[in-house]
Length: 357
Image (cartoon, rainbow, N blue to C red; front, side):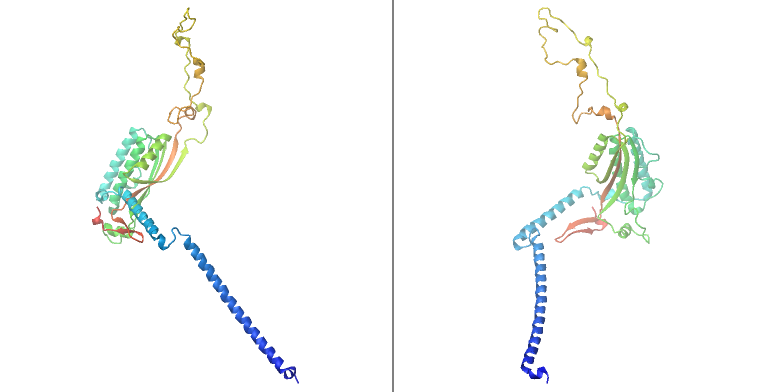
């Protein structure tokens, strides 16, 4: 007879205990997983709450007015900025298209006027210089780009005229890259201006790159950059300026050009000896204490102010020039685009060219 048969009660109790233990362990493990999941969700919620609270201002009902004030100030600032840029938007007739064969005459006149300006200021020019428009010296532009190209000619002439008046030593190079409309793919069929502009996804403005390389002195460069930055006629954006000394070695002793000092001699003075007073120059001549002789005075170096053109280092450095590379963009605001503000975002809406002013 087996032990279970002899001890039925004990065996039953042991079986019930084992089943209960297994059930209790399973229940505990399930509760542990639920607890871990709840704790994970709690931590995630706390992190989300901390992130929300870190916003300035905190999005609560109390800060709603402050948030609305910030949005209104942003909208007003954007509108003010738009108004400032509107001053650079040319009138419709300034960018109106015309027959492409007329553009060659415009480029020719542009070249002649700049030649005169640079020659008047004795500026060295590169050979066969058309000041960035070499491609159209003997070639017609695309009809839909003539208005924008004419505007670019006028802006570039203004820029180079300012450069000429600052009298650089030499204009080394002018490089003009094509802008989007000028290099857009031709339409499949012969269409209107709007057809071509639709093909290039007409932007709110055109960027017209230009690169200048010239040799000038420091003052002329400073004045030229100031005139670009302060003009209200054309929206030029300076992208890059690289300035390099004309010579990469320091000045030598032979480069120094000091003007010889004039030493006064006895012939430059009128000596009168008064027998009564025993004073040179007469009794009425004031006596100067700590006087310095003319020869000693000539040996005393003087340092001028920052505005003084004859500073102490100027004779040592000489009239060294700097080579300048200037990369800039001309921004042409599109006549058919208008910036509008709504409650959610700033959007660009394109209007028909016929409605542009």
